[in-house]
Image 1 (cartoon, rainbow, N blue to C red):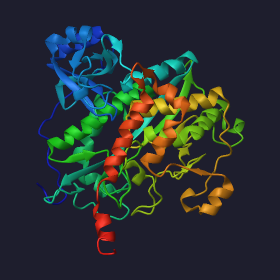
Image 2 (cartoon, rainbow, N blue to C red; image 1 turned 30 degrees about the vertical axis):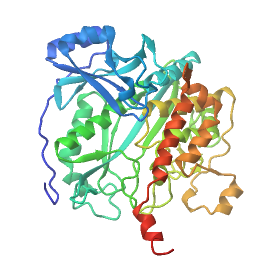
Image 3 (cartoon, one colour; image 1 turned 135 degrees about the vertical axis):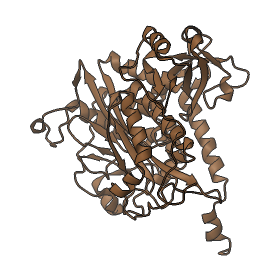
Image 4 (spheres, rainbow, N blue to C red; image 1 turned 135 degrees about the horizontal axis):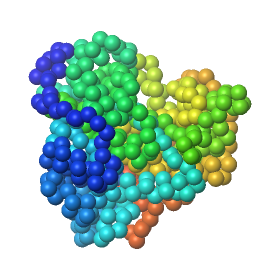
Amino acid sequence: MPTTNALPSPTTNGHLPAGPLPRTREEVTAYVRERGVEFVFAQFVDMHGKPNAKLVPAHHLDGLFDDGAGFAGAAAGDIGQTPNDPDLEAMPDASSFTPLPWRPEIARMACDVHVLGEPWGYCPRTILRRQLARAAALGYEFKIGAELEYFLVRRRADGGIEPADALDTLEQPCYDMRALTRNLDFVGDVARHIDALGWDNYATDHEDANGQFEQNFGFADALTTCDRAIFFRYMVESIAQERGLIATFMPKPFAHLTGNGCHFHMSLWKDGVNVFEAPLDEDPNGLGLSPTAYRFLGGLKAHAKAYIGLTAPTVTSYKRLVVGSRSGSAWAPVHISYGANNRTQMLRIPGPGRIEDRTVDGSCNPYLAATALLAAGLDGIENELDPGAPTGSLNLHELSEQERVARGIDVLPANLLDATRELERDDVLRAALGSNAKGDYLDYFVGVKRAEWTRAQEQITQWELDRYLQLY
């Protein structure tokens, strides 16, 4: 393995034919036949967003569309099944058809999980579909753009990790042109693949931490963006592995560096019009937001302590949600606030007509995160919740406790356990996540996350040994 700036070359060099991707069963069937696609991944996710799949030969495509791909659900992860349950069927959504740009003879389709022919209430994609249908009944379409940050690392001989680029050592490496250039082979391949899929890669940058990158693509309806987020993580990880590297979206892989966000930029649309947007001179706060957007903000603020259990769903997530890092800022929220182009806010308004939620991190299941944010926002609209005044250009990371209290600014939960306690008693999110004969999905989710918290608390870390072994 190289020990300086050069990264290994990929083992494959696929080429995705130009042209729009198919969106219907008939179009998929024709594309597979005409383009020589040999296999299709029937892919679904568990609670944690882990992609599960079966590789289906192209000559069995009709059977896949008709009957789905069968799985032993209890073996696939946390998706509400035990070994005695009937198999789940992954039913493909033709509109999600995605060729692998680096292996164009392979494609994937995102699937909705069914059991005994009925939609399965523990399927995250199905949960989001139901909340989107609720929004549609109110006349709204929910659109999201997602900013997925990741680290490119390699394993050391001792089992630890380090940035793959040994020269990436600056204390403030964000936007460093030289580090970006050294990694052009990797990020350039990813960018070309994004464009080949028609997602519109509009920027690639070196992020705030050593070895960290962000590659942006255009926004879309929420279901499409979530499907793309799952595929993007899979694609980046696969391309890294082909080079003998690891790409990780883990919220905080290095204690001293900034963590990985997955910020969601949100808007509601009606009849092709963004109903969040208003002329700047019609918004008393000058943010370019409509009354509908402010009520949506009110809902987000009201439910933030609970929904963060879904947008930042791991033990490590809360190690990202701190004030400082090596570069001087963690660029992550700790307060429940909103305001203009101010990256210390939880809810940033980067421009008229959209809201950025910065609690969302790289470990989220995007379907569940989108469900929670939409449910919270719709509650704000339906109940006309007031978000209060924006906090403006104030650097919230410099607030003293006394100043925070005086300004009436609340704080986010400090750990996963506290977040699950808030989530457990939020009836709006409970309803949004749904229920079936086995119970409420929210209780299932909380149970899994509480067990995760307990396992983490049972570990003895090196910090504890260093701090306490000879102190007592």
